Length: 147
Image (cartoon, rainbow, N blue to C red; front, side, top):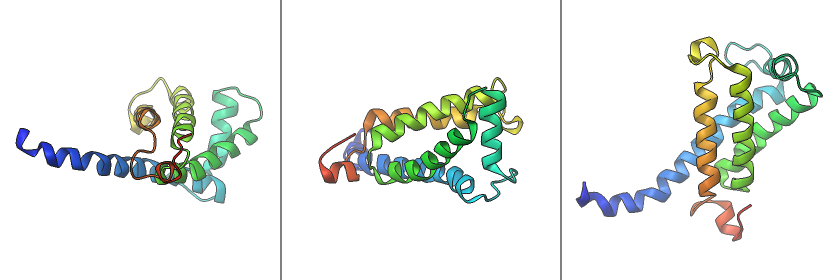
């Protein structure tokens, strides 16, 4: 509706900051249980689950170390994206992680079968955030530098 154009323009930076914050906090909910050894949904030990995916499905070396990196990225990187701090760098790292998660869970698509649509949409949101950066309401903007 053209008559709402001024509202849309004012809402753009706020709605983007809300999307960035919601995305970052959603990612944090996946990292904290891994770091603290807490149950996450149906997973009794999400860190063990991450190690198993990295080791057995992706066939990558140093699975425990990579899983610890992923847990830290999800926890602290998610907080950074939510706050708009080093937004582009962290969002790109999270997008790459979501590619690997999608490969590990693929080729199934339905989420009920541990499919890829959840990490896939998170990956695309991460790419969108990477492209936009921290924007107006961010620590990046406050310090005058985007990473």
